[in-house]
Amino acid sequence: MNDIAKIQLPEAVLEAMSGGIHIVRAYREFLGYSVEELAVACGLSIEEIENIEAGYRYDKGYRERIARSLSLPEDTFSVEVP
Image (cartoon, rainbow, N blue to C red; front, side, top):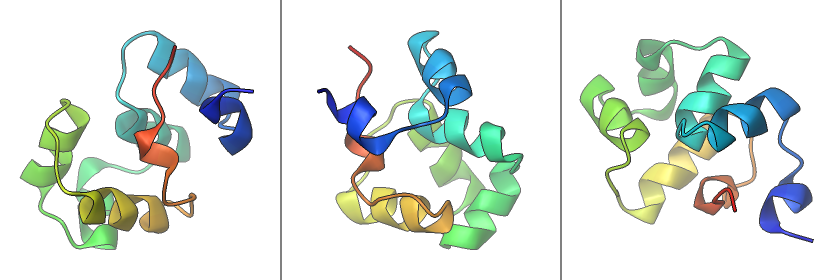
């Protein structure tokens, strides 16, 4: 069983990820959040969220903050589509 199956992401999120969309953006959009709303919820700047969604790496604490803001397991954003 791969990591994605263990986390059980919605099919729409998995489809977006398989099309090249970053998992943060895919899940954010699935939930209907704007970049601005997510930034406020997790205490990051809009630019930081946009950079993460563009694939730039940030420290693990940022990923954990975003995951908590979206009510996801903290290791969700370390998942990669095979």
